[in-house]
Length: 567
Image (cartoon, rainbow, N blue to C red; front, side):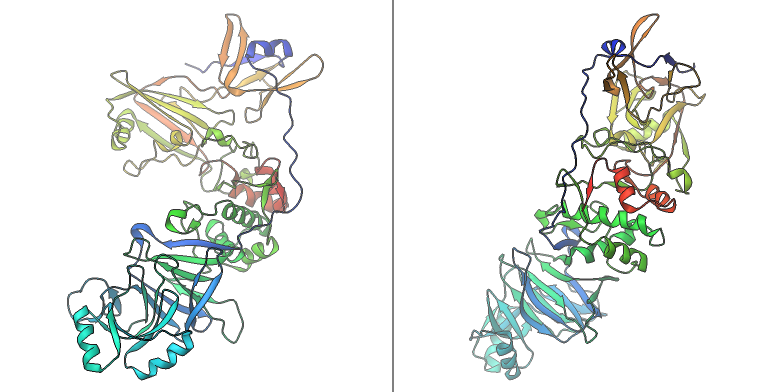
């Protein structure tokens, strides 16, 4: 059966009465003027946390020489309490740790190992500076400076028990007290050895931070950590009293230099990279304390933004950050939610049709630019049998019988809005917005809905979207743009796509502007789509295409984000 097509004349105000809507004539509020000033010039980026928190973590100078020990206060200002010339450090929880084969373990490994005990002899004297305590270390073998609760001490030895430390104090004739620090304590050793260099325990008031020192070149230091180079300092917090949460404290511009090359190809045109830089910077500034329970602002995964330091940075990506430094995207003086994604397949989407909230600058737009570049996802198609759909739903926890029908609904932009599945017993499950795009995504079945931009048809071609015609069959309404009614006095009012009706020979009939809502039955369902991502905000491949066509980064941002200010 062919999908019904409606033909009508340009809508008049009289006809609008049958659409059941109230005319609202209002232009988008004008964007506020002036530049946004970010009060947080230092960001906290979580690198390892939660279940991935570490028992030990290595650092090594890449650019720079040695490190300064200290802590960050609540204003994100660094306070130095010690230093070392060592260029390779390992921070570990103050626990009996074991060194074997160049690696550290918090449980005794098989084979030979050396132990680093968490009990020490603390000399019975408090010092007033790191330098003073460091000087006194010369009088004790196997000693180090410890910063405990705001004061400096000299500690000697590393023992696996209180009794062993007590015996050693007696045998060595040290006027000191056997002790172990709190569950917040972090010990620093020279990487690959059992030599303790420093210890930090400030209870819950502060956590150890390690700042790389500049070398003679004066360049911005970079530090190796887990195979990646990073700007900035590193904080080590034992939030649960067990393993260490590692946080990168970094200047916002240096952070953006670690995001852009992982979110966009550094060989792309500079204006596209600039647009990405502004989006990344704005996203960071608008998500301060996004992970407050873990003690940082943003994570380093795509849950927030991909961030891997400077390894992949190139001349183009660094230049894009430098030439847009301090630039943010705002709407009415407030930071924007700068969602972005790979490609839209032809149209972006209103935020409320994908997520929850209707955001005035996240309006769907028809995208004529992606066609000029190879997105890699311009055309994809997967055929699902009824058995496939049934199996996917069951794997995802839905107790359904055999699926016998699918009912898709679309937005005015032609993106999926909802999918309703009905089984042989008459029970149904409806998935809306982003869930509609992801419910059929299945690694198990090797079938993927990559974006919001797809249609559903049966194996024999039934379904898809219908069109609205104006005046003639040759004049098709562009359904990715709003529909308006024109009044006798020339007033124009937008028609909500969810409440459109037409007058036909049978009376008033409802119309879904993108032609959805038809229930499809059959043994096979074909998902035909394009694009990759959630379709809200900026298309990265669209930005590339616009840049190649000569548009500036301001043009790109103002095309994908409605009514915004850049400053």
